[in-house]
Image (cartoon, rainbow, N blue to C red; front, side, top):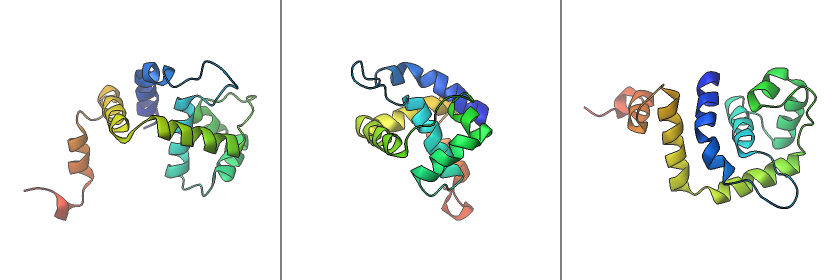
Length: 127
């Protein structure tokens, strides 16, 4: 799964480049925001503060997000605001298109319909 998310991130880097601000304070890179959010969801980390604490000392989490060992961890408030801005910029239909591109470039699945069929409980599957 980690390799698939890395490959998907490389495939989306061109689209992420459009989200970087050209002026002002440097923001958290969108691909790192998404990876950190994925960690938070997968490991059910309750809050952004706890996520930043985990990123501060867990080397596996740092590696997954793309932080080096000596990189400073973001402030939880900055992380929350950057993630909210990212979600504002990426509309629901664009997010679906990004997910479809990520899934198709990772080689694990060719269509989102295939995921829905494979992950649905047997009673919900068509035919």
